[in-house]
Length: 289
Image (cartoon, rainbow, N blue to C red; front, side, top):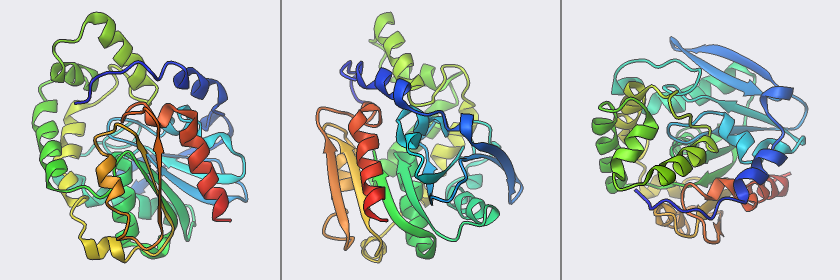
């Protein structure tokens, strides 16, 4: 677990002020994804569709807070991944993994979207990368941020998370257990930072999140041939000191059309709150028009 840092104090409030709330001007809905209700928000309109896939323990709200949905030139479609938010929380690790990719496929079919730009953060980036490898016809371009081409160490970490989460009442409590020397002030700061990611202090189903983590191995089993076959433009974004940065950088030289942006001074939690994050994502999308 990375050390808590306090250099996001400007980016967070800016993101809150500038982000146009997605739900305020969009249609919310729920559809049946092979027996699991999946909640989503769709801004509609004539712009190019952009599917947004959030991080572990977060919700679709993170994209508002990051300022990504502030542009009115796109049709933003953000889902709550199964096990998260207002979506269903089926029991068992086998209900997650590749089924989280299948939820995105089924959502696009439900909304009549034949192809879309796809943006994912952290776990969402791993879902997005797997989606692109398995269903290349559905993806016009890809943004992987906060994670990327993961491997055995990440698979082992997700297993650890899955085994330990169920012993805690909330995700925030689990995070504190990973850093038991935190002061109350540091913990309060951390809660504020998690909320800026759409992660509430008490509103997490830790049993479902544990199953999500335990099923993640199916998402991060991509081979070099899988990555090399991705022909669409790919943007990688990482905080400068994010431990996940190498898993994004190693896509370079394998995927044929890849570019990388590093957010100075940022770690895993800081990066999507920095104004440069939304600016970079929206700039990349504009370049695809």
